[in-house]
Image 1 (cartoon, helix red, strand yellow):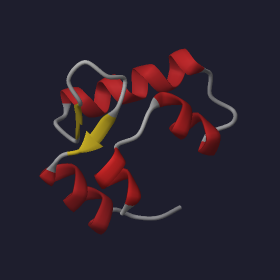
Image 2: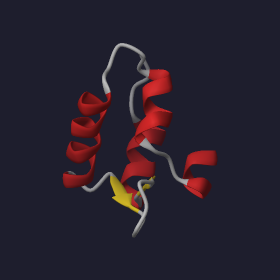
Image 3: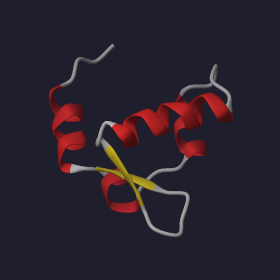
Length: 63
């Protein structure tokens, strides 16, 4: 799981969600952070999944 080691940024997510703008992805990241699924790496723009976030990713439905 590469994102768990290096973290991920808004621009990494936008590469997979090409129809979303930067501000839309920022709002999605904020919601994930408030729900405790991702955590911000201090003094950077990177995030990484929390333990709960990894569980949700592993068990969540795939579209």
